[in-house]
Length: 340
Ligand SMILES: [Zn+2]
Ligand SMILES: [Zn+2]
Picture 1 (cartoon, rainbow, N blue to C red):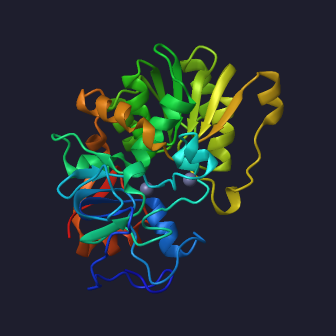
Picture 2: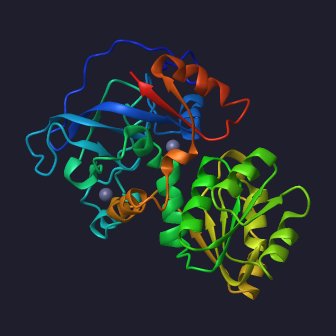
């Protein structure tokens, strides 16, 4: 819990949450530590009120359900997308819960899952049952990076077998995209400035690895025979966004997956090239809950492995130190809290 932005991160005793009438309480089994949590702690997210408990990449067991819940019961092993839809607005009625007009985001608009228990609203719409053999660490690793990468590659990029996919930035999000694109039968070129991350991308299925500092765009065009069919900015910066657009062949699809924050909010995009080459641009804000069955089937078949992007597991007591360290260095792979 933190009581001021950028202030101390401490484990505290608080009253157990009660389920909303249409919601549930989970006993948390695992919860990821994400850069978005760092931004929330720093006060960069206007939706966060103090005091606050972070945590949005979660999996656990239902321990209580409100009287209006029909589809979920105590004992169910479940996860949720980080963006829970209200079920009533126009985007939700169209099945696009990830862009709900009145969304609930645990760890942002409410208290999250860096806790023994977390309460979640609108359970019938948003709670996803886990296959019996998917453990909580792997399930927590699905969100937000892995499921957002899934939406980027499969839903927005519509990556087809044999197409070239460039992935700019090989942190947790980029490595997830590499794995998902390779599993779809695409040929992947990974772009980063970090040798270790490029090596990891290769091990997860990238056919080519390019150092962004040594003419990254030209190297991608060379490796792909004239440009990628689909290119992802998985970092989120003016430089990687422009490089991704410029890496595309004619009629290619740029997918903006990395968040554009602070000074990059209105990053310049080479729009003249977008027109001349008939490129298309896609933004991704997580994944609609209706895509989970396909994603979980791919995990169950072994085609993709969210646990492969986990770098470390820690107890709750260590979460604050992990979060504070994010400001100064980036770990390779995701960190997941596994004891509460
Ligand atoms: Zn909605
Ligand atoms: Zn996250």
